[in-house]
Length: 419
Image (cartoon, rainbow, N blue to C red):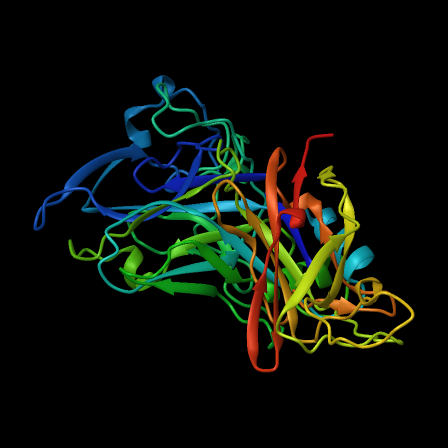
């Protein structure tokens, strides 16, 4: 399988309404612009004035703050974003040891839990985070509030200025929120000296469209890789993860008709839908040797090299035995049924979760093409991207004489188990 899935090692949502609250262990990540009051009114919020007293020493106990440490501001919009991180060593392992010199793409995928208030086209933007941050152990609604990790104004547990997101004097190509009453909200790159880097990566949807995220972040991952390897002389952008936020036109919109509130399953979910970074590359190789290509729409297939049970660290090459279901009657000295054929070059595979009937790996004309060698048709699957203790179904799609055939069989099933 020319698809390798990496799972996030940390994530957290940050909320403008709770500038110090950490949500590092929440089961969901959230992007939203929620009106906190009725239309035409505002809400007064009292928060710790971290941005007006930068450089002072901080005490994590709010009971010890003085009255001058607080500020009141009025707003009718509550904004949230989320940060998510993937290990750079994992990315480099895949690109250096598996993909090597092949062309690749990277997609950030996150699965929607709930979506409300999407009443017009909504765009989610992805930026590379500019500084490191701590995951923390908080959850939304903790009482007392947990403040030991990333939040709207803080990026780690340091009690001096280095523990807070900057709100001015940024390095080149870096920015943060410029909303006058809610500075912070992380720091992120909006570009670089590399003219090939396009930011942000985006995905748009409306009322009827699917809300799961599948965002092409190839440019961001590529600049992480080249910066780590000191390739080129462009802006060095270290892998500090992704920031996901609503586009500027939506994020601080004060219209009651434009208040998206979208939650995605996080790394701490108890479901089978954690966010992932999917690296895909073209490993297609088609060598026929002495084998013939099947040209009959009525075909029989079996999946070879399938023991039925795999561990998460397994890498398996499945082979497809194929022949016409009703061979032409001829006089031969051997059996037709022992002669193997190859699938046409326009053949693809997919993998479904048998319980949910959802595609884990969908048919892709570029990245799930079935290869061939003088022995049989084949494809390779990296089991690390499949949730353990679940059953999966392989499907094969091929085109023969202008007819598209999707084939599945009970012997095309397997299970991934914990080692």
